[in-house]
Image (cartoon, rainbow over all chains, first blue to last red; front, top):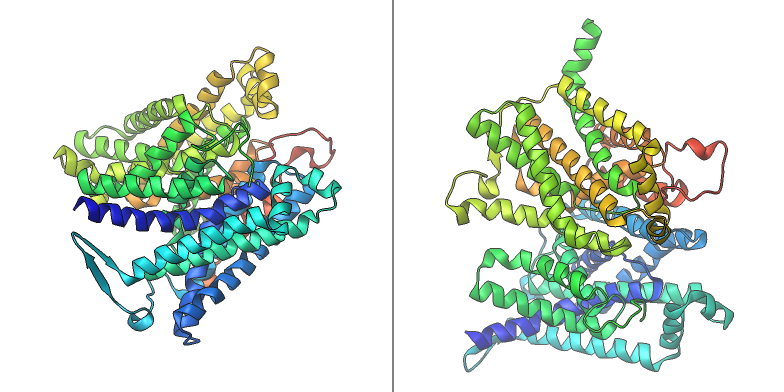
Length: 293
Length: 291
């Protein structure tokens, strides 16, 4: 029983981390809390669904295609909802409100295009295979999702630490003005960051849509509070922190459902969120400044 | 007179919803006016709705007393919530309040199960609320609130709140008790949201635990953003437009909700001070309640 809960928590933690990575990346580089991010995640799931259902692609092709599409959507959102505010040097709450409006637009577009009910991936999208290891059972799908999530996290870590783009992103995160003076094309780096974050959201959307076998225009909302909790736990803009936060939230949720009450599941995230905001607003791994990539 | 009664027969409920939404818009005006973005007002609305409805159903209390209790309960909860969260600024306050409506929902749905009472109706919601809300009661409440809003900018409190909005640190160094005034704005907003919740419950005759979530919080924000917080008429106009507009856009069907989102984005991008902007004609570069 206990070990099964641990396995469930590890798997759920990887999924939460994957979702939160793009969320925290946008904050780190752009300094924007993008509340439209969960809606891009929702659209990513629908992109994957369309690729599988309408284009009849296998899931291993549908996933990168959905990531590409939601990456472009992320860039479009940045271009329409945030760029004009950057140009005007508007206060940070303006971008937050703009992202709320964008989120409403995206959810209603999905509702118009795909109806409000829950859609599902076809049964044969992914082989059903269950493994039993002593007291623990785990499905092939869960193992795959865990593997893909970890691979994406490592890839993102390399991208930020080991590439020229990552260097530019960290420079922009530190100070857009200084970065521009050093000859870094700030707007282009921001566009690329928006693309990467969108692609991460899309990957999370497809994988979670598969895992919970449900895709709907409203699937972003319950993830929003969890995502916020995760990125605050880790420190806004902190990549490693988001991974740590994802696992902490997953363990707290799984254990409170298993040993306290399933009614508390949705309250766990909020309670964690308030506690961390009160005692360590810069996050568990936070340094004195909260803005970094 | 018959023209009026015809109009009222068709549009009376829309007008009453518009009045309730105006009260809601005023509830968030208080926090926005002091530069705080709080998304907790839908949760306060739920508290007001539940408590006033339970009181009028169970004890037959007259509506004004039920509303007052609902509003005061919302204010009391706001005080407790505010003690920790009002120390946070900017987006951190927004994040800390974003999940509050969800907590109220979880509490409302599980209350009966844990307490063993049959009070709040659980997930099915609270039905059989008497229809006590009258247009006159709404109008009187609104007029009192508008009077307060008109007085606000010239009062000591209003000046302190405006100073906090413009620069918290400067305000503090001028001797403004920042935390106390923030708390005042937060609690006042919660009280007004609680009143609106009570009116709403006694108009629709039903309290649905699921109708006070993030969507509701965003709608309330949209009213104030559209109208702007530079003038007291802003939130009223914003609420009126956003209540009536969806009714006249029924032909858009499933895409109707997009309009609210578009309005928020377009206003924040191109009209950051909202529709009602007294300074638009003689523009001075003073930072005002730019959301």
